[in-house]
Amino acid sequence: MSGKNWLSGALGLVFPRCCFLCGLPLDLAGQLCAACLNRIPRLKPPFCSRCGMSLFPAAGDGHVCGACLGSPPLFHRARAEFVYEEPLADILHGLKYRADFSTLPVLAELIRPLQGQLSLDLESDRVVPVPLHRKRLMDRGFNQSLLLAELFFPESRGVILPQTLLRVRHTPPQTTLDGVARRKNLAGAFAVSRPRSIRGRRVFLVDDVLTTGTTVNECARVLLAAGVSAVEVVTVARVA
Ligand SMILES: [Zn+2]
Ligand SMILES: [Zn+2]
Image 1 (cartoon, rainbow, N blue to C red):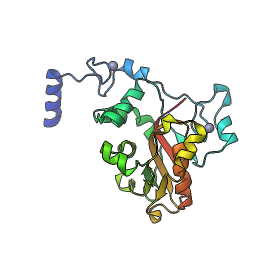
Image 2 (image 1 turned 120 degrees about the horizontal axis):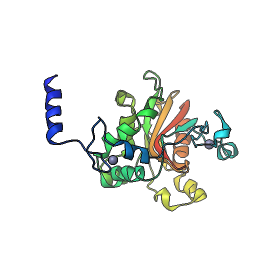
Image 3 (image 1 turned 120 degrees about the vertical axis):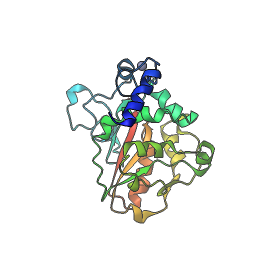
Image 4 (image 1 turned 30 degrees about the vertical axis):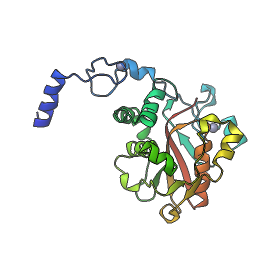
């Protein structure tokens, strides 16, 4: 046993690690006990091949949902691992609104299955977090989407570009608005500052939650106009 393993083993005897959600001691490695992990609802296949929404089992793979057929999104595909419900919603809230960075190891563990499916090509692809306006960034002190991008692509930090897509207009939170108002609210909200860094490349656009998709669609519009070849949206959760 190496010195470090010996020490962490001894500390584990004195301070047993506890489940992040229920506080019960953990006997296996990880941040959550099996019961709490099972309380976090995963999205079940088959998925809409554009927006990643769960479809009825009879739909089979490769189908597109009615919403995407009626109004195809500008992004190529969106993927998430979980349904945006409790207790995950509170974990994401903790990160975003309470600056609770102890959520990061938990989120890292939760996104692992999705992470394994993201075939990022370090040579040609780039990662872009959904940006905050400068004012909100100053208030909050960090961009949660950038932190999540670093969790999704921990070995690829060199290709994460937090300064390329900017939020140039301060807008009211999308959660207070309905469909049409959401789109109007975001018109002209984003701009690309360094188009050469992404031109001709596939971009993985990272956000915490996909709700109506208006925000990532607006980001995709601006990225594609700047010459990006395709936009792949990656979020931890989505509204079912
Ligand atoms: Zn638990
Ligand atoms: Zn869809």
